Image (cartoon, rainbow, N blue to C red; front, side, top):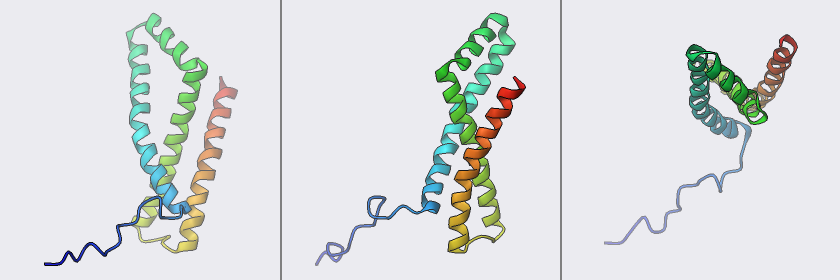
Length: 130
């Protein structure tokens, strides 16, 4: 019996496809969803530190207030906002809207631009209030 699958092409993968905005946003949405698990652990750690007493809370604030801590919190803020905006996009699709190629591409680009702008806005407001 001849092997009929030997002449078939392999399934394409990311090295074959040309990245398009909707594909990139789908991948980034999954990555930010995973990153939110780790960021939420940081928030829980900070809350536990606040409940544990002033010494531990001061140490947690020092760690999160360091340059590395602020970069992690900046990344968490962006992941949270980006994932939320991506969720709105998925909700719109669940309602049956926005499947046109041109509109979907514009929405994907708007998602990244809006998430970056909103992250900067949140941090600027945070520093002004502080």
